[in-house]
Image 1 (cartoon, rainbow, N blue to C red):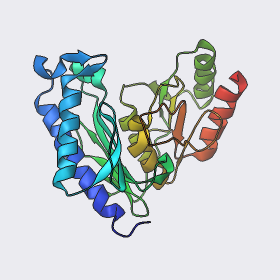
Image 2 (image 1 turned 90 degrees about the vertical axis):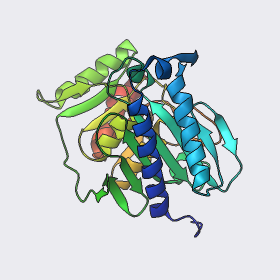
Image 3 (image 1 turned 135 degrees about the horizontal axis):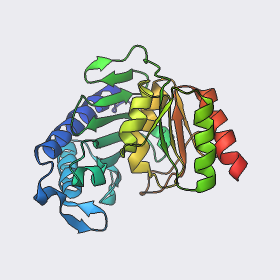
Image 4 (image 1 turned 135 degrees about the vertical axis):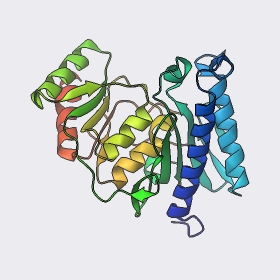
Length: 268
């Protein structure tokens, strides 16, 4: 690890900038100006939030390179940053209060090189963050022990066969387990990291590195793991915005591997 980049310093920077960006988005939520489309699925809020984050990083004196949802690859510094300025744009556009801002820092060009990050809810609550070797945080408080909620699963699927296998797997966990899909993967994976939910699974092969970099690092720092549909630890390049594929995250590693085996492998 390069000595000039301290994970805790980077975590605090990520928390501050993601929190400020979330507050900016919150102040303009439900306004026609911020929810106006500017091409594809991009809205004004996406671009303004991204610009604010990049300007704030420059204000910190950080020379970075990295990827962002709207800008793609940018910069030429030694420190890599991965930015999702607004995860949950559809919710935000429709004045539904479930969206987030995420920032991750890495010392290399792979997802496994991420050493610090923050996921800030736009509408409520404190930023959720981590730094490698220093634990996970909710706001300014270090999470000493996850609550280990065994009653909630965040799940997304489109293929009928995979969806059927997924429902069957979740049903076998018990009658009290509830399925939710709220529309901000970064935030949902971060809550899994804190034990607020049992599992996160996205079987649509749509999620990208910018969507998950901060929250994947957080799950791993909190003692869990994030897997792909082959049961391998999730990995991806940070050289460009890329699709990472199917994602399964949990603090319960054996449970996550069992899901992969029964939902994905039997379908391959």
